Image (cartoon, rainbow, N blue to C red; front, side, top):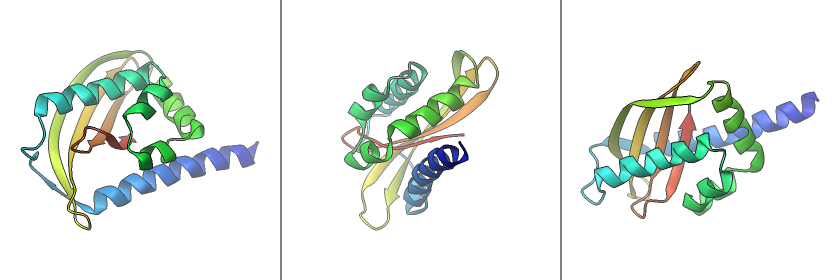
Length: 141
């Protein structure tokens, strides 16, 4: 039993480390003019809706190749388990949208930080999109 818990925790840690390395390699800035702020907001709300619906295939359909590889069934199980601890989704409380540029590739991203209220807990989602509106990063706190 301990082995499987460690394995799933290890996989989740790997995804978190990938996201953190992505974030640390980027500089925070204003949203690039190449993005439509309303489209980014709707895409982030869609990702959160898919998480609430436990739709891992729907989420994977939005992902970059790297995110598809990182978001295994074990990782999705952990994400859904965490969100389930919050109870039923109530509403989006806040959402801020900014930009980031990967220093090594100079690729620009849209970064959404969304505060979502559930019955028991409030979660902060950090969701990152490429210019093609592909999901490039997902972090849940």
